[in-house]
Image (tube, rainbow, N blue to C red; front, side):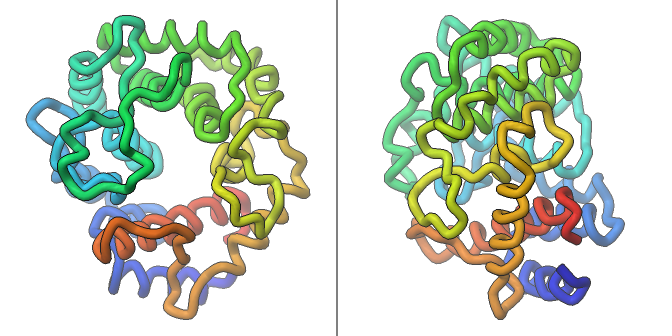
Length: 287
């Protein structure tokens, strides 16, 4: 992609994106401040240490959820921010809602009182899904959190990864854990085995242009240096990257392929998709 395409994306974010995505764009592409990202992100934090307040656009509730906490941690990761204070606050909140084995429900019943996408009309993914516990445990450990919940969830995740991971969003959670856990040696040893099912897993889209619901190889592996990335051949990544670059719209943003909760949600998702498209293209050497 050309610099002009990045400039058009920036103009779209300035006109239609949330402040968070604008600050993340500036930090990644315009030498912006990581502290500015952190300041915006803290506006979504609640007194319980968790995050809410529609940080995840599909769930408009103010309440803290594991889903919103995961989005917050991804934002910190994308801005290369390591913050033990935020991490420990999130871990404390997660401990307050965790199952006995350490797993956490991705959302809570009270959030359903606010506008939300219908696919969130449930709480805990069926056992033994690693989504979102694995990704949360990995990213929090990467921040250096030694909260007891992080230790418990990390132990549970390593045990869970001894069994096959066979769904798209679960593969994202597992890949995030393997990328972020401080135990790099163990991660390298198991990554290929854990990701061996990626090509046959339910909810993984392998055809460029396939509009069925699922995640793509680029969503599982947003960078080419991640453990397990060789689960897919490079030509497949290249095909999805070509398709992604070609989806930029006339207004500079990227589209969404689902029905949003409301107009605010639509605008927020387009800003988030635009930023994510630029991050993926940049990480894979297309910018």
